[in-house]
Amino acid sequence: MSRSRTAMLAALALVAGASGTALAVVPGDPGIAAIPCTVAYTVQNQWDTGFTANVTVTNNSAAKTSWSVKWAYAGNQQITNGWNAKITQSGTAVTANNETYNGTLPNGGSVSFGFQASYSGTNAVPTTFTLDGVTCNVDSGGGTPTDPGTPTDPGTPSTKVDNPYAGAKVYVNPEWSAKAAAETGGSRISNQPTGVWLDRIAAIEGVGSGMGLRDHLDAALAQKGSGEEVVQLVVYDLPGRDCAALASNGELGPTEIDKYKTQFIDPIAAILADSKYASLRIVTTIEIDSLPNLVTNTGSRPTATAACDTMKANGNYVKGVGYALDKLGAIPNVYNYIDAGHHGWLGWDDNFAPAAQLFYEAANAEGATVDDVHGFITNTANYSALKENNFTINDSVNGTSVRQSKWVDWNRYVDELSYAQAFRTQLVSTGFRSTIGMLIDTSRNGWGGTARPTGPGATTSVDTYVDGGRYDRRIHIGNWCNQSGAGLGERPQAAPAAGIDAYVWMKPPGESDGSSSAIPNDEGKGFDRMCDPTYTGNPRNGNNMSGALAGAPLSGHWFSAQFQQLMQNAYPPL
Image (tube, rainbow, N blue to C red; front, top):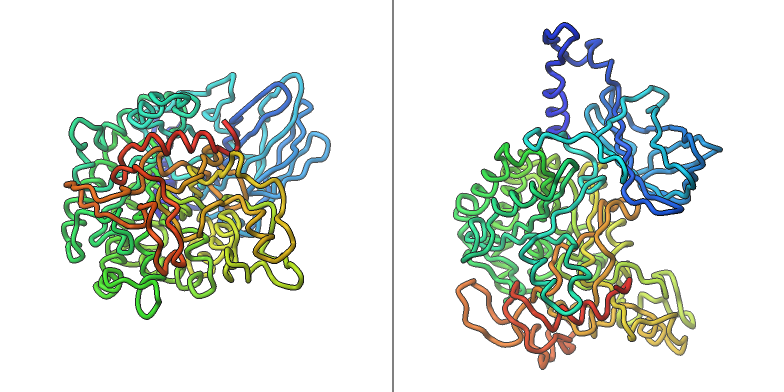
């Protein structure tokens, strides 16, 4: 990204010489050639017979359209699988070549990839790495499980990395953690990182006795120690917010774009820009649901709402997202990820490319550029299965395509992983940087427990085949509120698959999607019948039952029954 390159050049502007004098370094100077590239090799997890590791390469020489990183092991380490690079090994020698989607490596740019390997005896970190045959400096700050590395000055800004989650811990919100730990069995997951939701202006300072943004950032610094730390924020208070779902309506009216800018985004940006927090990697999820609503719930579509038509006409969703991207993207250690719905929302042909085009429009509004977008996030606060293993979009039953089943309904995708990877490609072809990464919220899409199918359904018809085999047990893929039968999904992890920066729990498990009945409140949250278990539906869910749990509180409030269900149905199991 252009700001990353600027930051790198600024950091190299003065290099102390052996005599203590300052040497000016400019592009093309011999001084910069002395640091052609830097490699950070981090062992993330290690056990008796194996380990996982992450490698981040920073290029300080001429821009590249492809790259090759090589190193050799001193022991018997053997790589068994990898991600975000094509990794081969011959004896002790390892070669990692770029994938088609991450070959571009600008001056000052970084790229990360990871792998799993076996070993016995000593797992020594390689001492020499090359980038396209040129020897790189080795960053000793990454450390290993037995060597924590060199402490980092908490006030020192760091250059943006390709994947902020690589080699980093992720902030555990003490407020959510305490609620989880207070539940029977909750201590099994209470140490997991979750998103901090800034869903109204008051949340910046803290609602009541709750923690505000600075409180969370200070707590993150305390958790950080000598390593890297990611803090996950959900920025969520657009004017006329979430125009198709009353449960998540917000405090700002459709025309209050100026208030959104000056009383919400500007104060957040001022806090995040404080040099005290410069060593944190701050990941922002930008305005979930709203832009996708402009694609599917406007105009002549049967799912259209008057509120969404209003927001499309006044342009305040696009303006608000653009403004947030511009202000937050200007901060060197902030990584913006735009919400990209989920496969059961934007996976159809008439939604897929138009959504990417709308996101591109927003990324270039109000002073923003694509350089302000580090990636996209899918399935935020939703339930779509990560990977359906019992059927694919290419299957057919008795000559009928899976796409014609009632569940798939002509969608091109059957799960979030395939959708996120394909949508990433679409976004790049639309004009976003080839370095963008995807996040997938797996907080509630595990669908385990006794109802989890163990194989494909019967081949009586395409519907029995799909319905009998699908992990996602919702009544309809359009159901979104406090879904009965849901379970925790994959635990948060960095770089789990090609093009995916991380699986995250952006929606804190146990926090309600909306109330089962109308509850008076001062949070601007309405009552959406999709949260009522007796509701028989609307065109957005094919006029099916809502599938919602009974007894739910307002959105964002603690819902103990849901939390217990999520743990019971977790997959992988707890």
